Image (cartoon, rainbow over all chains, first blue to last red; front, side):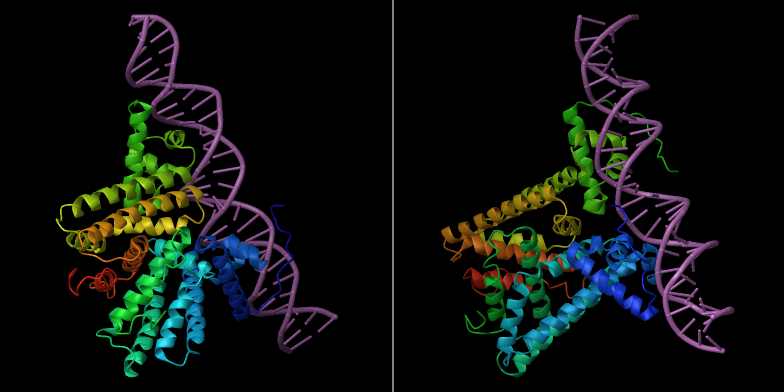
Length: 206
Length: 206
DNA sequence: CATCTTATTGATCATGTGATCAATAACCCA
DNA sequence: TGGGTTATTGATCACATGATCAATAAGATG
């Protein structure tokens, strides 16, 4: 019962094993949140001894931080790959909002919530959070600038608009994580705020 | 070194002791976040044996949830006591935003971040979070309705506007918790979004 | 002042955490 | 096929967590 009987794991190259463990840590975090990323948690899921996990990371704080980065950087790629299929800047912004507010992303949202909480006690994680937030902001700035160049948007300060856009999204998603009341149409203000902020006609985004 | 030499604590009535421990738990949480609210953490700060803390709460999950409620309900009272000094609805809304976006509230913001994270693994805490969020929403709805009654605001759906207002605030504050880049003017969109949403002239709030 | 109620404590348990290291065995290469 | 390199493991620390309970002593009551 206690020990999930486990054969000796296959002998992999350090690179392979390292990649395997990162992928496993990713799964663990998406299922149980960042607090589930423990030596024993990752090891048992990977079918490996806890000591092996410890062997491949300098510390658990570092593993948690790396796991956060893996998950959230992948998320950026996935989201923007989806968004990029839209032909116009306005369409891309609309798709971006819709994707970020979509249900079924609670696992990633929960990881972000864990990160904002745990980042206060894990310096490596806090640094990772800052890096990924900057990546997100830069990606949103690109969307805004594209729209401005195409003449569809008007933005005084694209950098600031991007930060505040992400703030709105993250706040609404944090709320929905624990409290679903009123969450159905919770994105309406996001659409309207962005239309207003970018000089779009009402209803242009949704 | 290990045991901070402690005399036997004064013998208090259950009500007094209970109140003392809640106040202590509050201080502990505001200093180290909700994860710092442990049997030993609260006990040592209160100058009391860990067993006594356990004696007064059915479980630690319950103590954490109660501590969250104490802190955040007090915060509602404090914020709205301040806001109520403004004579007009527009002034009250402006003061509300300014207060909520003010620095120096990181301790409470951190408690909220902890709650959104830990609420997924602590049912009592999740329930407390929902309750306090509802209280916040109701209080904001009052401000919006006041403005509508006074003819200063126009709101189709005050309930929804209140939720989305709180979403904006919480998102921006979560960001500022770990990432201060661009945080200085991070509230600008909040002001503009509310002006737009409530039919106020540009610049009416800030 | 003696007695009794009960708030408080110390000791202890079971559990979970990260970390370390000698011992092991899987795999590669000669 | 044998030997050597090293990925992997089991065992074990030290520590922190929540929880329980008999023993203690503070303070009220007579």
